[in-house]
Image 1: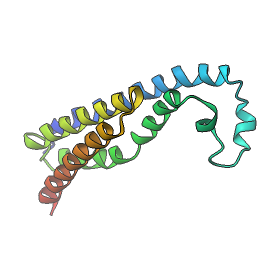
Image 2: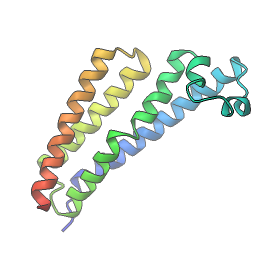
Image 3: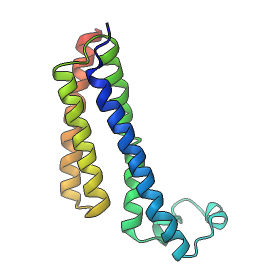
Image 4: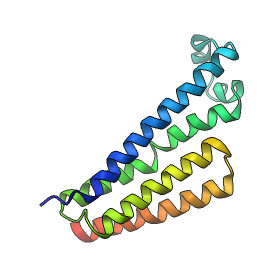
Length: 143
């Protein structure tokens, strides 16, 4: 029996990831144009000699956050789907899944606006603890 409580947060975080994708390109393309970046020339440069050196940090923060949304959240997606499939996706699991999404959205907003590291780290650490709790719930349901 599938309990779909954790699937809403999965979709919500996927939507947020695409919002960040749009925000990234809405700021990055104009900044690349203003900096007269030649994308073909950039592709031939060594790693590390890329856009971080050529564009303002405030522009790159969005790209960095978009990348971050493809790191730990991939574990969240897998665990949330497992919880739904094994019938343990409602109740506490759903609450934790929504908490994870809220924390990741807040992390994004901090990173792409003020980029205050201590605040970002705190939100990341809290979201990681929530993710660990979800993993424990999944392990208890599966094993």
